Length: 351
Image (cartoon, rainbow, N blue to C red; front, side, top):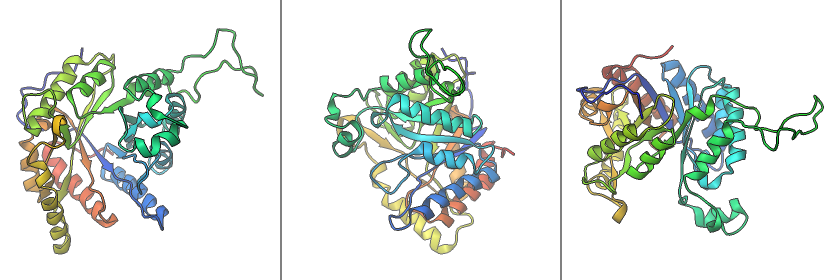
């Protein structure tokens, strides 16, 4: 069970940890420029005092396809900020080989990695599954248990019997995952959007990341805030890990404060184009609920966040940067969040 202090009596957000989630987009004709720009956003986040910087991982589109490779580079451009993945689709990964890559990143970053995952059939499985698994991917286990096996690999137990060794120039070696980062298994996250997934994450001791998309399946509500709040409460009730559970809530936040008039119109148009999808549940039986984007002045956004029932129950906020914005717009959003929005929620920059 969780030992986290009760927070139900809180009347509003008290954010102590602020992170950003970056799309990691680029163009086919110049992928370096986009990737370099994303690395610069990680550097900016550290300068502004953000506690964490996370990268999305996606396949077959012009976004970062290997979070560990990208974060290995980010580990050499930053010194303090946590480095996160949101999320790695475990169905495309070998639980042992991915554990090796994540351990390498954690060592290079001196223990700053926060590794997030999702399970189930990936959305592009019909196109990519056969390439990843060299044949009919439907025969492979793509469930949560694949994450559990990765976590066990990260614990670094020796393979084979007690006398199994591998010849090596420095002398016989007992085989194990290397480099071994002893604490990394306690820094795994699950990107959850349903009641069943948050319960699995809790029962297996993973930290919880919830975002602006949730599912009301299994819940007697069609309201986004009520559904996600029920999931967070269920997670805390079921948490079975030995470490302190962490919960981060992600929201799309786009402040207008220091944007020019043209950029403000762009932001408002972006918000309006996405509004209809937030009005009713999507996806049939899955009952997908989407939180409205928070576009406005810092005062308007802060007022909305103070009314968010989930933020009243967590201490970690993640800023989900929109897709397809310009590098300078991302920089402006981060600056306004760090200087105007987050401090109004109780956050202080980390130096």
